[in-house]
Image (tube, rainbow, N blue to C red; front, side, top):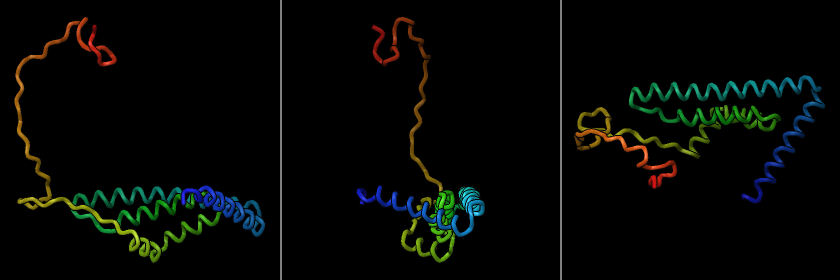
Length: 159
């Protein structure tokens, strides 16, 4: 598979270039450039909304100590769709558009489930993590090393 990856990337680039040429012949140069520019703007807005939406959703659910299943998957699908819209060409835009459709996202969610780990419940029921430790009090004064003694830059002794 890794040997075929450069060929697949090259074939994808050729298909994108061919799609731009075909749409350019059908619509003209200016409308084609405007469509590519609109796809880039849509891609940026999708990536921005995916990041913001994920941050807000995680913040609200962390405060409520329950993470809603599927939030991360939807945000990742929206972010990948945004990246596909950023690529110049129309095949990648079509793939990005497919990622925005709910049935496709549900199908991908069933194929790649994301399991979340919840906080361990304690005897108090608040989901806090308890760490057992012992405190040791250190007393005394720190002595400054003399200028000729101590470690140099390389960590070796000053001799």
